View 1: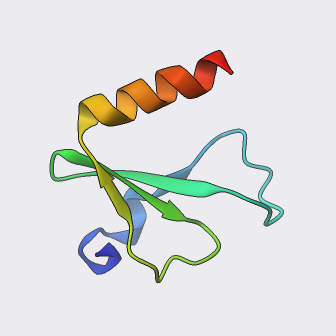
View 2 (view 1 turned 30 degrees about the horizontal axis):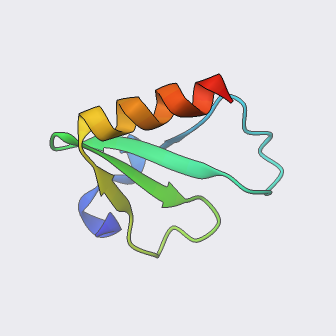
View 3 (view 1 turned 180 degrees about the vertical axis):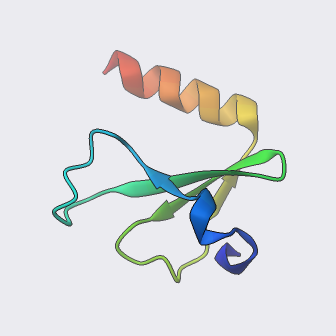
Length: 63
């Protein structure tokens, strides 16, 4: 649940324009990578193991 992750731990990509749009926020928290929708931060975040996050970022970077 997002309430357990301090707001100061969340960050957006440096590629985010800050104009709304579609963006996610990421937080490293208690050994996992949390991902949430920046437009609706009240929804539960997705929790990923570090290896799963690294694989996703590597895959996305190839696109």
